[in-house]
Image 1 (spheres, one colour):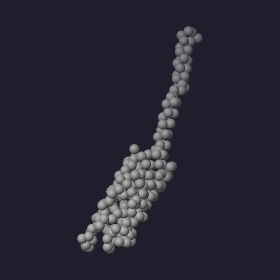
Image 2 (image 1 turned 45 degrees about the vertical axis):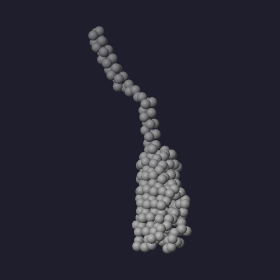
Image 3 (image 1 turned 120 degrees about the horizontal axis):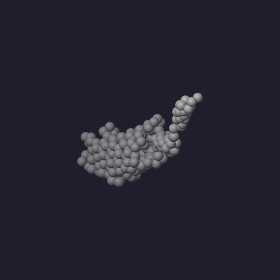
Length: 228
């Protein structure tokens, strides 16, 4: 074999070896970066599936104000007035199914009812302190139940019968039970809530035919909560 053939064969062998080496070489992988990305994605997914154990927000609601009790028809049960409240709410998430939501709110109620022989006017300002336990039944849907204490800050409840006027107040503080249902998004909650008091309106200073009547506040509202 002459020198030219030897050099040619050596060149072919070198090129083939280089090609094989290039094909079998591993592509460098930045494992630390990939592991960091995977860890961040896992943490985000976990945070989305299990909300923070404590959050706070503000709730606004409005609805109807009426009455329950044996003589509620005499004070206009079928002709409800209006109610609204606003205030901070605190959300304690126990696990994926249960949470406790205490809150404090400034509430306002108004109701007016007229009949031929008498008329009534209810106007009340309250501090409402409800504590509600919620059970998540499917996705963001929940059912809730709890209790509410409501000191009455100021009231202008009046009754007029045959030209005679009097003022009367609800038992202070007012106390009752709550039931609700709603849906929770990541930072927003909507709910429908019913509140029924177990304390009667005071009747020791109500004139004539009002004495001895039993009627208690009933409030049904739609609420919206924004969580910070």
